[in-house]
Image 1 (cartoon, rainbow, N blue to C red):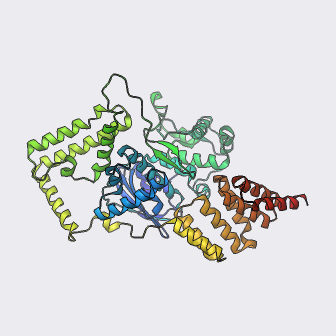
Image 2: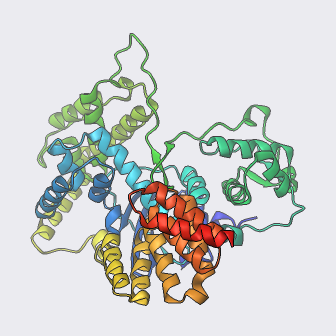
Image 3: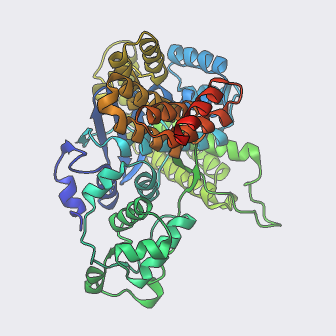
Length: 523
């Protein structure tokens, strides 16, 4: 049904139109690759770092995807505090997340959850970059923070909510008489009620039409989820499933893959969030409910990737064996996995323990310790202007941050000046950067105004898609009314004006428009 992961990764660069983003994600996960995936389309660029097949970092040149702007948008940080922290971060070269924690503007635990959500937003956005070029880079720069995404969950969510339907239909084709079935013994992501309903319907080995009927989902939702299930190896053509070796009875029931659960985000996006904390067992000295310990654990976990062995263990370069051993034992005791009961916190404590053990092992060996001292000396030289640039600097995104709101404001100015072609161009830029329903509604309206006789049907379809996604967008309903009116669809125009009026009863223009269209409908 799909090329093997090895076949997918044989090509080091290409186009997502030919090798879809979810196919790349899945191949990197199965092959457990450690590398960087670079994506470019027009002005936009992203670089995703993978460790052992899992996404652990994503850099982007889109302003709204930066951590600071994301925290402002989510109401976790004021614009004033963001600007102050940003200026200080630029001056001191301290990551903005660390500064916010130092200033007490956000707790380490909450920061980690927001960083997960921010990274999921960046990655899910890539599912709509169907015209991008990609390049796989073997060398990586270790990420500063330790955020790790559940690849199978991203693939299911991205295909279900973000990937354009035309692309799904292009890359997932079959005849009407083909039957589908569950693949036993395969672990998968956590399923929503809709996903679970469709997955259970696969037990009856239905055709696509029968699958729709059993699940109660429309064509769009059914095809998207079936594509994701087949790509993840949870489903396949029935005859292909029959050819596979049957697993032992105990392995037939597929358990949910451990990892973050999905929680909805505004704008139809979904993101990967921290798993809900399990209640602590009574009578045991676990630290799960101790906010200070929990925050200290998350703070140490987020920063440990970007630290060398000396910094990680908090010891000087001339540390002696006894002092080194004491520092190591103190840290392993402070964040021992035995102190935590919650799976999510225990996993992070285990990750820290591995990091401390590696650092202790490196500094215990004379040659390794000397090598790390040389690296620190080289880093100090580079800071004053000498030395070889790091991998991150060699491959960094050089484009200035792209701000969708700036493009949108310029487009509104051009629209007001009746420069419809220029307005459409800038609304297109804004939608490229951040496809908010409002931006998409204005883009459709500008498209229509350029050539009403030629673009009416396309603009109307775009607007109907927007109001389906965001029924609360007043401008989209108004534009739908105006374009429907121009296309002679008076009943639809009346309904759209009524929806706009319901959202904004103070705008009396809608009353006149409703009355006028009612007269047209009666004729």
